[in-house]
Image 1: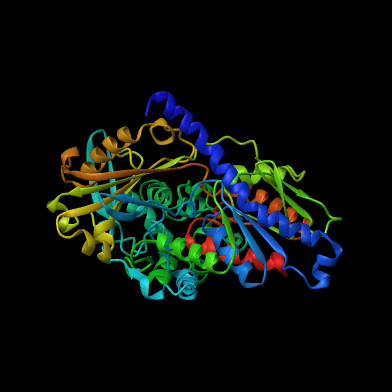
Image 2: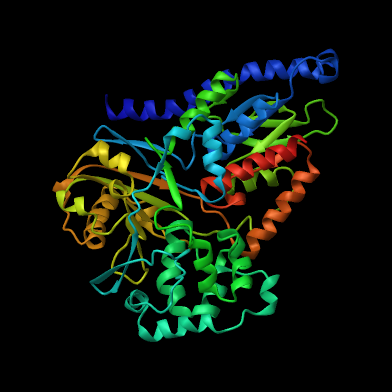
Length: 514
């Protein structure tokens, strides 16, 4: 194929994909025309209500399944060529691996219960129990220590041990211990609190900057000063008020949760959940349309089907609409309904990249950094976190066998533009990942050790936090009230993690159909 032929083919592919999407939607429009006719209305007993779900990530698929089970005809419109959103899969040297989310929080049982509904309960996989480490240092010196086993979000439960002094220094550990004797402010019972405010006041800046910030950056991809305490740790405020101490509150919450037990995975990868949802929806008769870009949503109160969803300029009529896309497209579609959201024009770097390495390195059999490591921003390492996946997941180690390991490194810090993360070449990122993995793991790796690699990039996927985000969510809630049948969901309103996304999507749909 000549370069001219290749360019022609590349230009044709988006047009062909869009045309295919529109052909799939012809049957939807035909059904809608029947509903518009008085004799085909719901009152006449013909035609189930039609729900259009915009976005085929986890939130959209969960919402679509619940709507289908409630008797709706369901159409899922996904702008890309695949379903799953931030849950994705890559094949590296013949080995299928999660290239997005790879675990879920077990607290509350939300995800485990949902997996039971999906007949995936027997696939729930515990971790190995290996602890995580913290990488610190400056210039070219790297120091690595195990994180406190009973920590929560990096907040230590035990303030007088040698381990904490090694991590933050003796003076900082003495400052942290004042938490044990300082009364909790009375207004903390009701005052809005961020994780940063609580940790800084109770334990000092060293604990915040050296322990908590790397954990929050690695887990939530945000800053603790913008993370609501109740969103990050729903029971922590109550426990603080009961025990009179942040450390004692963490100990109370973590006493029945040893290291590694607070998360779980799915044997074969989290992507199995997406595959199961897609299969279920197909079998239930839902229409899943990839490459379907939604341009606009209109609301026509006087119409039997009040919503008109424009796909590549062609309208699709619906009784109900679920908006389950990323932040910026969601804001644009909501503004198309005539409502301006606070901070919609805010420009902020939130690109994330994941570099996955499959390496042949028997020295890693001993898991020198346990299940992985979180990286302090001052350390001479560009990655913000590393997961030693074959040390964390026994089922994966069994698949790869001794000597072969999967290492995942994440890049991208909120509010800090990084060209390598946002637009750099995959080759450059993998080269950086090999260097970073060597420093973090304390085992020299070279490109010759790499059997295969993959880069997954995400943009506009970090949930908004802080007062501005709360204000925006309040406006979204009002818009939902103003347009009956509209539901807005997804990680940007629900928060990070499968548990929050699943719970919010189900709640949003239940409210919209009630």
